[in-house]
Length: 278
Image (cartoon, rainbow, N blue to C red):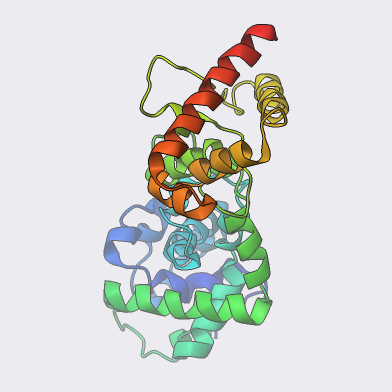
């Protein structure tokens, strides 16, 4: 009979045998473990390997990679940093082990009941992805994570993302500097110059590189907008929110979109004058 402390790494051994072959191949320690419990039990080296930090790190990383895509945040775990709350949630290894055993019956007891010498085959990759999708959904419901996830999705931070040219980070930066959300007021006027490259009305500095410059620029735009008429501010806001000239004209009661274009040109002129006085 194999005895071990309740907090031993061996409690995660069943998860090792659920990892798809392409994932376990990237984990040197896990890959070195025999796919037979009898061989592990007969080897002090293998038992020591299981109790080591490398085993725990690799099984945590592997399980997190399988769990992360099911939180609905786009990209892969590797695209995010440890500052991301969702990245941290994906490392809830005890929860994944518990729920997987509840869903499938596959845990330590099932592992120990196997006949000596049994070789454990690699699982079907698609089935494992479906299984993790199910347990992540259960965890979100049972742990009450959904309200927190909604806030994280609504208010991401630059620190959440690795500084690589990934689609998820580019999407974040685009929304950060020029949001199209109706719920968050943008500070960028770049949409007003999309058809006039020479009229560089405003440029938002990179907040990650120069926070002071970003704050100053934000304040400048807000002060300029305060000088506009209510109708012009509405036009700017609607244009920033992604509405076309025709849609703005319909929303504000203009006969056609040419009136909107004239007002935008007037706003650009006012901006140049305002900028020159600063």
